[in-house]
Every structure is written in structure tokens, then in C-alpha cells.
Image (cartoon, rainbow, N blue to C red; front, top):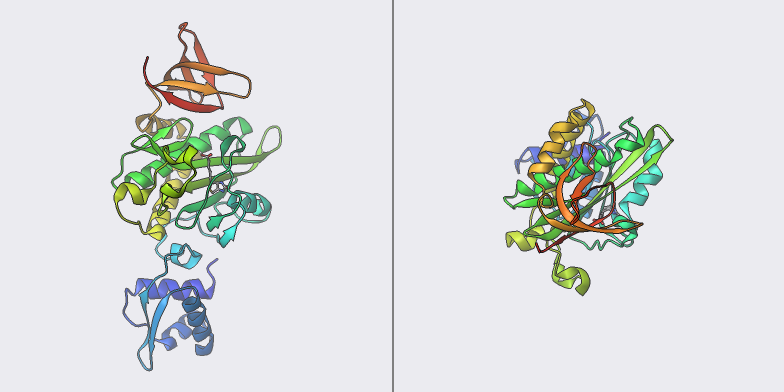
Length: 325
Ligand code: BTN
């Protein structure tokens, strides 16, 4: 549900700089003009520049570079994903918040933060999350068996790659779901589930994108293998537009997923794969395997052909691309 502040903001954004009278707003939302004035003040406090002139009304003259729900929802064309957005200027991890609230909110709720103090990556790693990035978690209740959870992860990777490609960048997917541009990582995805033996109760898909981030300030061990949208494009992106695009791509794929059209999503994954055809080193909890990545199966497991010509199926693990011998 949008609150009045979000509705007023949406109206101002949609009127594209033309003034909207306080009386019209008060009438449309059945509140007093002083209530409208209170929300305008709150929007200004969030960084929106709003001109007001007596007898003419309010006009939006500038938006902040922030990911507040009102800005994202205005113009967002989804029906499920992002209908409810929980915003934090700073939080430990949007995945943690999403897991805490998953039981009591509707499917498609998005938790988003400007920065994270304890961002979580795959395989227990830390995830650096400074301001300027896009750090969000989507809560899903897909009604599927835990066995199929990797499908959601692959789907999320396809949605992120498509959103990045829409900026004109050659995004590819490294198995299972790192998004790379010219071989460097720009986005990571962490999917966490809460499940009974035979049914997922909820699934939290955490997506982290180095958008307007300076990767030069990253620690040495990740700096050389990381990039950002800003660095690749040579300019900052509009993060609100990008999040809207990402949520739309995500919803379109999720609707396909729910209609049992996962094979077509997997086909898209394959066409964007950076891993298939590469020599790789896979590290799982129990072993390290080298081989050529020759495909993914219907559940998204990586199929490797080892030096001895043996086929190995990898369900989860860390994947490193190697130079061909
Ligand atoms: C990876 O290791 O590649 C996955 C990184 C996932 C990071 C995102 S940022 C939003 C969400 N909140 C977290 O704490 N992690 C995920």
C-alpha cells in the first residue's frame, strides 16, 4: 500500500514539473491542505526539491540520489515485486531484515538500503556495501520444494544480467549467478530459504550491484576482479530507473517461473553464460575439481568434464575461470 507521501510524490513526478495545486491533491486524497503541506515538508526533508507558489501549487524541481520507496514506486509497472518497499538509509544486511519480516509481509516485498554494515555474500563471505550501490532483497513465497530453490537463484541472475544489458553493457553470468562485465564482477546474488522438508516457506533473494561505486577503494584482494556500472559506463547511472528496470525484469521472469516455464529461463541463462566452455576450478565443501564446464542441467547444476573424461555434476560451490591449458 502506498502512503499519502508516496502518492503525492508519484503525482508530482507524473506531472513532469508542471505545478499541481494543493487543493487538487487534498481533494484527490481526501485529506486537508495542511496535511498535504506536512507531506511536502517531509519530502523536502528527504531531499526532494519542491517549489510552492500561492494559487499555483507544488512542482517537483529536483530528486535526491536516494532509493526511497516513493521514488521507486512512481512509474514502477510491476504487480507483485516492489508493491511494498522497506527502506533503510543504513542497515546490517537487507537479507537479515527480509528474513525477519518474511513471515508477516506479502510476497514481493523488497527491502532496500543505501548502505550495509554487515553485507553477506555467498559461502559465508562478507559483501562490501558502500553508498552508491544497490543493495536489495526480494521476499518470495513460491510454494515449491527446497530442491528447486537453485532455479530461483538462476532466475535472479538472468534478471540482473538483463537489467545491466539494458544499459548497453555486455553483462554475462558466471555460474551460478555472479554477473560479470568484461570478466569483472559487478553483481552478486545470495538466495536464502526457510523451508520444511517438502515445501519452501519463503525465499529471500539478495541482490548486490556495484552501481555508482568506486571499486578503486575496495580492498586489494577483490579490487582487480571487481567493477562498477559507473566505471564501465564512464558516468553515474540513475539508480531509481535501474531498480525499476531490475524489478520489472525480475517480475516478468518470476511470472514465467510460476507458469512452469523454467526451461525458457534456463535457455536465457545459457545464452548469457560466461562459464560454459571455460576451464574451471570448482571448490565445494568436500573437494576441489578441475575440468571444462560443458553445460548446466535442468536444476542449474554445473556439468564438468574432468581431465580424465569423467562427467561431474556440481550443485553448489565456488567457481573460478582458468586459462585454457
Ligand atoms: C555474492 O557473494 O556474490 C553474493 C552477494 C550478495 C549481496 C547482496 S547485497 C543485498 C543482500 N544483502 C546482503 O547482505 N547480501 C545481499
